[in-house]
Amino acid sequence: MRTKHFILAFYLLFMLIPIYWLVNMSFKTNAEITQQLTLWPENFTLANYTVIFTDPAWYMGYVHSIQYVAMNTVLSVAFALPAAYAFSRYRFLGDKHLFFWLLTNRMAPPAVFALPFFNLYSAVGLFDTPLAIALAHCIFNIPLAVWILEGFMSGVPREIDETAYIDGYSFPRFFVKIFMPLIAPGIGVAAFFCFMFSWVELLLGRTLTNNMPISSIMTRTASAAGMDWGLLAAAGVLTIIPGALVIWFVRNYIAKGFALGRV
Image 1: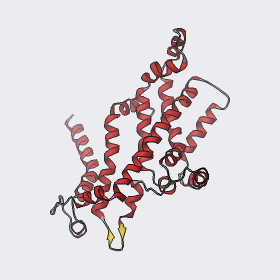
Image 2: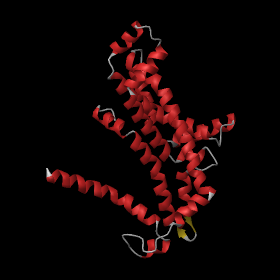
Image 3: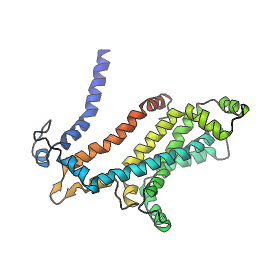
Image 4: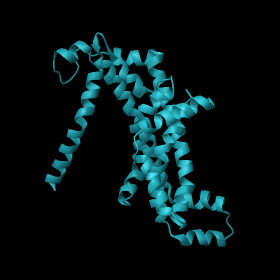
């Protein structure tokens, strides 16, 4: 038993080393980072975080990212719920082929869709808006959400649907009041993955708007003077925080998702 605990502790420590090193670098100057190896900051500084919180080019990157990521998460889950219910409860011609086609959109690289979306949004006036990126990310997040939710919905007995109809529930009322609470873990897991995949996506976020998301702004730390490692590390630490918060709120749902074998 002690051996298992030791292995688990060693694994967790090993996984935390990169995060600790990132936080460690964020409180150092570039001179200390590049000239010597230190386990903790010898000249502790908050200058890197000060730049991010005082420079609009930096902190607005977080604002823009959170805007379109939140919109995409809501849209993806909202559209995936009825689609997943249809795949779970009904059998129709080509249903398995359609389900597989949805997953192929998730497999396609974002570069495939960058030019069509750019031309389309420029024509209809959606270019350079948070909605443009949110809708573009739906192309790969909705199939993922449908795949996850369909597994959770298939685990709910069909008799519950039939009993609700016998009791006089309309479909919208049954779906919202009875069915959705039963698949709440699936909704939490789907929302988590939609949030994370949209948060880390770079190409579409950089192509479809002039208001750069934080993932794009972080690529601008290189200059003629070299890479600003401290500033990049501080931005990386702040980028981890939203994902960590989402994981904290849906941690129990993720555990259930793994237990059900759908994640």
